Length: 423
Image (cartoon, rainbow, N blue to C red; front, top):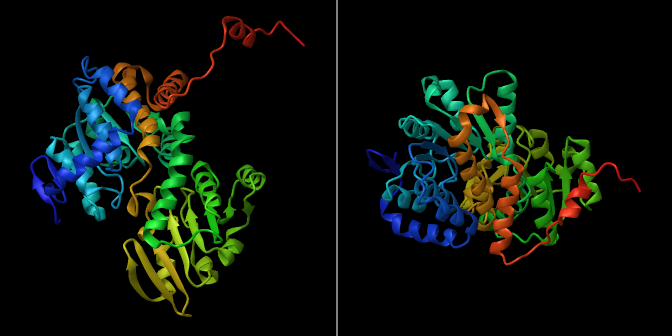
């Protein structure tokens, strides 16, 4: 491990802390919702006595969340939730601020789980997750911690799906709030955040012209839809692949061409996987791709692109640019894989813009507050944040943008629930 080491942190290079502080300060200037929550609770410190262990991408926006949790009284320990998503300067700044952080860019699998284990040394009362690796680690390796954990939260679609399956099997041992299911998360972060940051990652890694390209989006959920929306805006001819009929129908009615991947593989110039499922691109697809095709993933896990299948067709590889590896196949065709098939928006770019993460992380903060107050009453299982919190967060965001909206009158509110009136 080529990292700077202290007893309570492990990061790549502590000398990067000044750069990291500037990045965090920039994010704070773009995150008014979270800053308003910080100002509201830094005096009363409702999270005093809570030990929050987080496993979430170490970005400048995450640092704003960590600072806010700390300002509200919590003790915080942190690790990254993806080996290629940690911003080393941000990690250094957090270490210098006294956060027990174990994260650096380019971790291997052993280092990734070692880092999670170190954050669990603080014996958390609350867990905060993106992808559920922390929750799974507690359940599979540290069951002795169950007794002290009030509850946790989960940020991603994939993580929530897996936790619900775990709960259905009776294996989830404490309450988890599905932050991903808050409207101010999934309908903004997943759509606008993923759409912009994924294309940002592709452009940083390749500098290709998207206008006129056939861009294939695998999966037309919220993340895939966001990628399609932004790619269309840049002049790409967007093709979607799907396994869900209603999602495919939505894509069609929104002007996106829908094909099976076996056909799309022949036409695509750029491919983005956004499904949360393994083996979306496999050997037969690589066999039919054009020379020069660019392949990347924006789903949480790196199993959507079967790299081993691609390697089986490959005679040589070379790194063309940062996060861009050329695979030359046995017939001379070249396929370019970005960020080793991991999250291209975080590995090759900076992740979602601060403005959209403002709402997502406000939800994470509210989840911690809710669990600290009433987590013991929730019971095991996956729970949702109350609708009123969603609307409060959206309201603060609108206010920060100088936008005013109407309010229902008392008569309108009464009318909305009056079933005695007909036409």
